[in-house]
Structures are given as C-alpha cells and as structure tokens.
Length: 395
Ligand SMILES: Cc1cc2nc3c(=O)[nH]c(=O)nc-3n(C[C@H](O)[C@H](O)[C@H](O)COP(=O)(O)OP(=O)(O)OC[C@H]3O[C@@H](n4cnc5c(N)ncnc54)[C@H](O)[C@@H]3O)c2cc1C
Image (tube, rainbow, N blue to C red; front, side, top):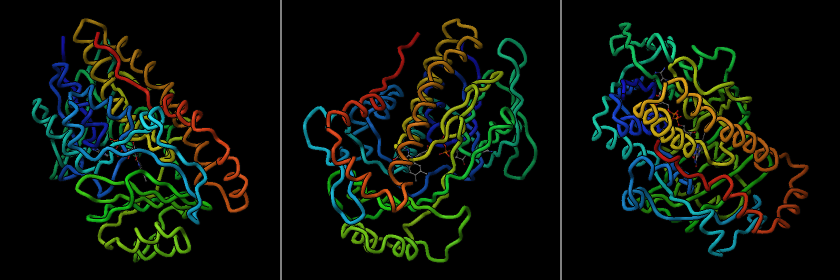
C-alpha cells in the first residue's frame, strides 16, 4: 500500500524523488527553504545516464529534446589551446559521450511542472531544522521546520527523503559525524545568451584550474571556470576576477569571458563529502543527491546521480512498498543499489581532479604527454561504465 512522503529540498534530487514517489501513488509534499523555487543561472551537461533517469521519470524523447540541444564531449585542451585528448567522432564514442546541454533552470522547471501535474504539494519558505527518523516497522518519521513567519512546525510521514543538498540538515540530524569539507576550489559559472562557442563540450586544463564551455538551450553558451581559491573568498568584481585568473589562456577561453555580461556570472565554493555516508537510509529516511554523496564536479555526475537516486526512490522504495514489501527491506535494497555506485563515482571524481584540474604547474607537461597516448577505445569503455546506467525494473 502506498503511503505519505515528505521530501526535504526542492532541488533536482528532491523534485526527481517527488515525481517518482507520486508516480508510485504516494501522497508527496516537498519542503523547500527558499521563498521561490528555482536554480542558479548555469548549465548542466546531461549525460546518457541522466537522460535514462529522465525517461524513468516519465519524460519522453520529445520532452528531453525540449530541454536543450544534443551535444557531445569533444576532448580536453591544455590552457594554451593545444589538444591533449581529442575525442574523434566515431559512432561508438559519440553515443557513449552524447550529452544534452541544458540550462539548469529549464531542467528544474520541467521537473517542477511534472511534480505539480502529478499532484505533489510544494511548500516554500519551509526550512527544515531537524528530523526524527522513526523506525521502518514502527514510529513514523517527524520533520521539524519553520514557516515563512519563522514559526516552528512539524509533519509526520511514512517516508522522508533527505534531498537538502551538500549542507543537509537531514544528514546533520541522522549522521552528525559526516560533515562536508571545502574542496579547495571555487567555481564561476555563467550562461551567455547569443554566444556560440562550438558545437560540443570543450574543456581546458591548466595549473589548479579548469575552464569549460558547452552550448545550451536558446542558442546560449554555458561556461564554468573552476579554480583553486581559499574558502569564503569575497570578490567585488567576479567577472573581472575570472578574467584575471584566465589571462593568457587559449583564445577561445578569452573570447567567451569577454563576451560575458557581469550580471551573468555566479560563483560557488565547492564542498564535498569525503568518505560518503555509511548508509543511505536510517529509520524511515532515505538520502539522495548531494545530501547523500556530494562529489567533486570533475566528472560532471552530481545532477545525473541525483536524478538516478530519484528514480530509485520511486522504483525500489515507493513501488516496492506499494507492492507489499516491508519498508525496511525496500530501504536496504535502495542502499545496496545506490551506495556502491555513488561511492565509486565519488572516488573516481577525486582521482580525476588529482590528475586533471587540481594538478599543479610542475606536472602539466608529463600529464599531457600521458593523456595524448590514451586510445579512444579506453575512453569509450570508461564512459560506458559510468554513463551506461539504466533505471531498475519496477517490482
Ligand atoms: C561547478 C559545478 C558544476 C557542476 N556541473 C555539473 C554537470 O555538468 N553535470 C552534473 O550532473 N552535475 C554537475 N554539478 C553537480 C550538481 O549541480 C549537483 O550535484 C546537484 O545539483 C545536486 O542536486 P541536489 O538536489 O542534491 O542538491 P541542491 O541542488 O543543492 O538542492 C538542495 C535543495 O534543498 C534546499 N534546502 C537546503 N537546505 C534546506 C533545509 N534545511 N530545508 C529545506 N530546504 C533546504 C535548497 O534550497 C535546494 O533547493 C556541478 C556542480 C558544481 C559545483
């Protein structure tokens, strides 16, 4: 029998979970601390596994195509603009590295529309302060939150989804020893309307830095500049600082930065969760997205795995319980399906950072020489292993 669920956080992972829960017949409420739901002005590269997850959430090919242009990973260049890994256009590799270049707000808006169409209740100005997890075969879970007037409220539920991002209050309540740490890196991101910067995802590596560009919906270009910086650095002029940091980089990097209006630029310090969580479920609470497994962005898999988690909350937990499985067994099955994969991706993201954008000036030449010898068949195999994920079957 289906039950009631409270999803904490209305980001990509929370909305994906809400859609999947509602599809399985659960009465679902999303609690979001912001006054308005939305996303930062940035892009996201939807890899094949993210597209498969969207399929599992009921998005057909036309709906996915409407999110943004089809594109692909074209390779990596050094900061002077010399290729260090060219990805040729052969069909196997093209399929394994196919992407949709999407504006985050468009993805978030599509998930929100679908959640509302399925009857999900979305409550804004609801900041969750703590959670009592309950027991899978006993007490219900209780979510404590404040409303817009800062008045304390509480709701109980058969299932709570912790989808409140890297600084998760749900994680702090249930796994207090597991805290996110600063990666040492901060990331500028911008979407520049009317700018064309090539048909594919391009990335440039330099000492302690990475710059990337990708076409997104509406004929715009998304770029990010990921650089080493002390935590909490305050800058008066973000665009000016990015321009300084990438001075002397490849012509294409310079062109994209100079075409950017200053109001388009945002910057966030990047945190992650080394070691991950010992379990992705506790009591009646299941953890998804950055709340469960915030990783370095060096493999571009954070939003993709948040979407995968959402599908699994629906297919493994919600549909499993609706089909008569005990909640405890369904939560254990979710943990077994998600934790090994997300831990492996988090570790791979750390290695990828060490060898890629986190590498210092001394090793650039050696690393680039090694990269130039990597055969594209190895890239195809690696991409398939990460991005060949497909949704689990319904029980
Ligand atoms: C520079 C950079 C580039 C990236 N590029 C990519 C990419 O190309 N591809 C990709 O797949 N991933 C990418 N990612 C990762 C991706 O952005 C995240 O992993 C993903 O957005 C996580 O989604 P989430 O829903 O778990 O968390 P969030 O998006 O952080 O959402 C959490 C939500 O919970 C709300 N919330 C927080 N606390 C509370 C509370 N106490 N009560 C109620 N609500 C609360 C927040 O307001 C927010 O709406 C990138 C990340 C970075 C930093």
